[in-house]
Image (cartoon, rainbow, N blue to C red; front, side):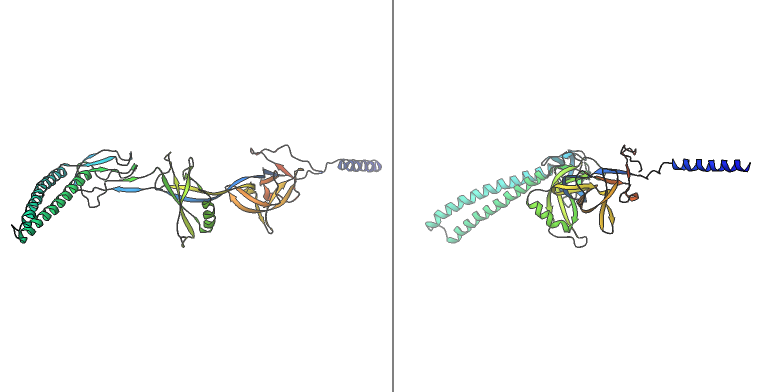
Length: 373
């Protein structure tokens, strides 16, 4: 019985050894990653800032004469043209003043004609010594005085005509009207009372500041042609395109920035005075730039690097230097080549030589999965 048990033990051990010899080697752990392709392409060099929209012109419309406002010819918020009638002040007092000034002018013109004729007669009599020199001088003074009075009367008529014109208040610029500050029936005075404010919004300006370190580049590329400026409302929308129109003559020493302005046609009306916008100033376009997603770049003791995926689906490090950022892209120099697959997500779990499992945009694995040795 002991001999039979020993035989069974030996047979079981042999079976276990054979079974262990047939086990498969363990699978090599794969790291799931997302990749993007490095490309050589044209990339604009742009400066990004936050700007404020301001009107090209802003005019507070004020009356030039005193009187009662009898008519308003527009509605608040209307677009108005230059020279368009906005308000009518009661013209009757100014019409009466003009008629009076014209009557005085006519009277004094007749007196001036009479003084001139008298001077001619006295001049002839003075030559024959029929009158004294004193009488002749008096006649000449009367004629000169009449001419001066006539000039003063003409000035009074001109002023009366001007006042009558001022009774009709016109738009000094084209633009959009704001809130109406005075209503029909109110008395208005020429002492600084504002009737309405007009802002010119076509075209319009956007004011923004960039670091003063960019001033030399701005001046360089501006001298070769106009610089493109894009502005989009902070809430989003279609970008508006314009041209850089102004560079301030001094750097703000407290902020280290230089103030710029862009001129926009604003035909769409998306830019509104006082609003905040995101501004992009394009200096030039770099034709052949190596571009990779900015999120792919990692920092190490020896500088920046990225993980690239080789043909056998293993990871390898590539040294890179970020020359500049362009939105969510990085313009780099270094060991990356055009067309290489660069890891953009999952690189924190990688090491050189590690096998990777490339995920698609939906998060599923691709067919590039590799088995273990």
